[in-house]
Picture (cartoon, rainbow, N blue to C red):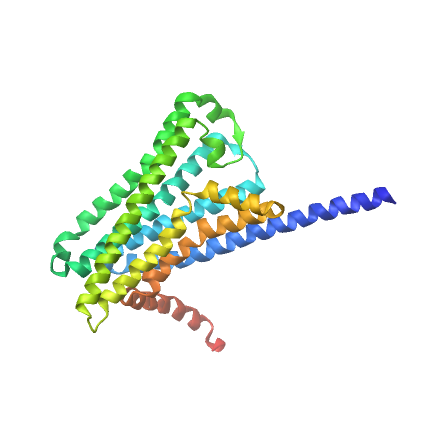
Length: 316
């Protein structure tokens, strides 16, 4: 009797754990597919209309969207791999983690550049076309990727220099903390994160204050300054969520100590809050708030819906 009840409780506990794990993966995949679908519509809209190709603002926006698609796909893949395969080859983990870090670091830098573009458009409207050219925009995007590489490449070089055979033959749980273990890597990471944190927030606060002052002075009826100010505020909120990545281990460890019984739930909620939700804000800032982009997005969606309605004439 005792043995059968013990077996039942163990099997019941295991089935509960499997159900919870499956639910977490379904939630992550559902959110990832939904956000990537919306971002995919934005990318297709950008590609189909020449008017966006010559506007630095939309070029920066679509770079942010493409970057979010890559980051979200990589992040969700790592999450599912952690449950399905548990351990993978260290070299494959290095590739996935590096791509995730690149794209994660790109987001705050891209937001800072977009805030500067808003600042130039509001405070120097007559020089905007001269200062914000398409060529300079692509150069800035290249600079964003170069600055992001400062975070990743030193850690990769240190790993290759210290233990290349381990990287080829070992299998690990694919987390950055399990891959880049060298103390120098940790120190470089902390220094770079601190520099990015200070630099990006300084840019954001500077541009917001300048736009706010311009809006107060102009008090224009069309509300362009107010809209730009709200856009920078949304950038700030998105940036705040993205910057949580920089203090990820400290805050996550603190929350798990406060709620030790719910460590797994805390880890999951924190993952969704830091790595998935910020990617949902990008479509809102320009895809839904910007009149020009929203107009072309509606045209693109109507072109998709129209053929479907012709295939199903009785559905109306």
